[in-house]
Image 1 (cartoon, helix red, strand yellow):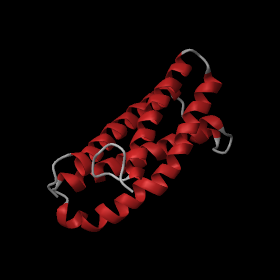
Image 2: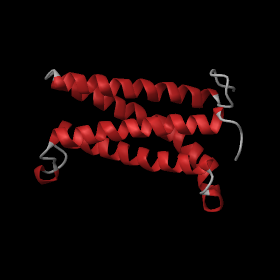
Image 3: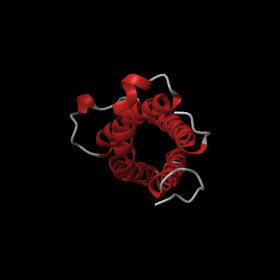
Image 4: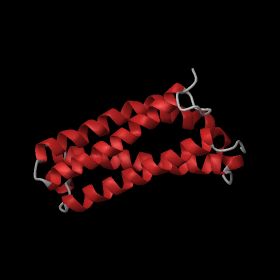
Length: 152
């Protein structure tokens, strides 16, 4: 099924792009909640984004990377079509894992006290910045894959 942005993208790719942008905005809203000392709402907001992102990764992004990029990577790493997707995928995995770690450390008693962060604000700011780098690289991936003139 064709997407709704008028590019080469599928409906799933277009929907994923919208969901990812909405999640990036939600993370900024969550940061604002923390800044205004509404920590419970902040935690819920950030946790929902992390959890909603898991099926997006599993159903849209990972299959695309696995089928379209990984088999071609060793022969075409110099091509931006593959390079930008790989950078996005690696940074995205790092952001998701770090976010889940922060969620476990801050929102549960699962991790031992010694494994928890001491400087929460620093790590949460790093995570927010990393997430936005990933979001922007995802927008770049979308553009190169679906909107830019074909050259891969």
